Image (cartoon, rainbow, N blue to C red; front, side):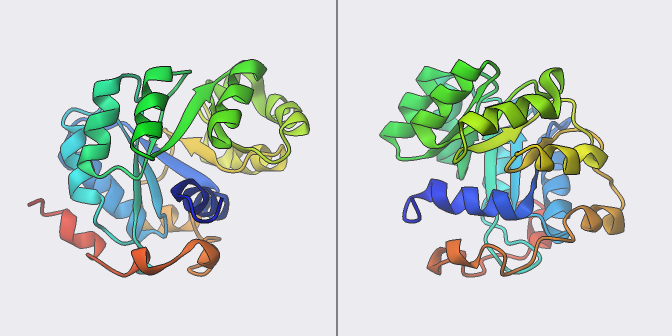
Length: 229
């Protein structure tokens, strides 16, 4: 699926290994945190609908570039309704994520040819999400642990699997070893710039070059969004 936006996103996630999931007190904080992540070498970031003013934060961060000059991929998570899906895409979201099966969101994604990573917990829910889009968010991941992901990987060898929920940064290697494509992290990401950069130190500017194209031409520097519009 290299010509489909999902193939591009999945390549980025596989290289990045960690998908930050931001739940912030307001849009300004979400923009500041996203800007810091992009400066640290992160490229794909998940904002969430639980942040007040989240749509504005998406609009302000979607045009940015990461530290390597590649266009950011700003997604929206905790998308569970048609209205949220439409608003997120209108704001410029590169992808949508739900915490559980959300057929109404899937319908919007299909109609608008958008990338949607559907959430699931049971093997049946995860398999259904993978059949629909080749990927699934496993939530809440900490309940099943890395062993659960290992079992899912055994029967879904080609799937993009993103466990999320209750995972700390130090635990990421264990989840990757179990077969996760990338790991969603909501809590525990450091605020210190140097420590944050260390989380993404293995992300090379060319790691996902096969997914890059004209759409990745530099647009705005990360610091441009911190001041708002």
